[in-house]
Amino acid sequence: MQSSKGDQFLRMARSLPVRTAVFTVGPLLVALAQLINAYVHGSDIFVVGVVAAMMVVFSVLATNYHLAGFHVSRLDGSYPAD
Image (cartoon, rainbow, N blue to C red; front, side, top):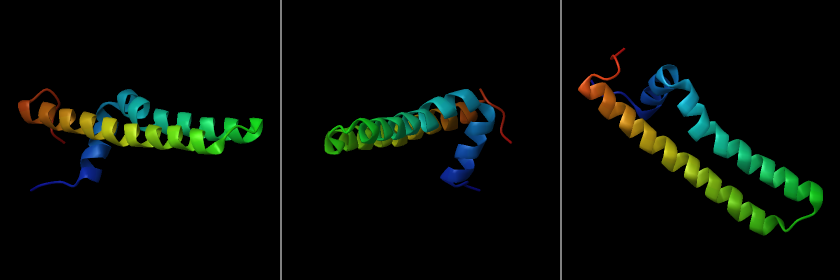
């Protein structure tokens, strides 16, 4: 039976919590901090918004990459199946 990406993500988060936090939550927090910093200091919000959007895209791509690697590792036996 095939599990959904959400289930696989939760398995990865339980097995590798630090890696999941660094590559999933970390870039999102950096993007939010950039936006807040730009607002507080009156910087050009468009440029900072583009950088924040790129950080969100990076977070999605990095999470999918690590999720695929985790799936392969589970298949070859490096991580135990639930």
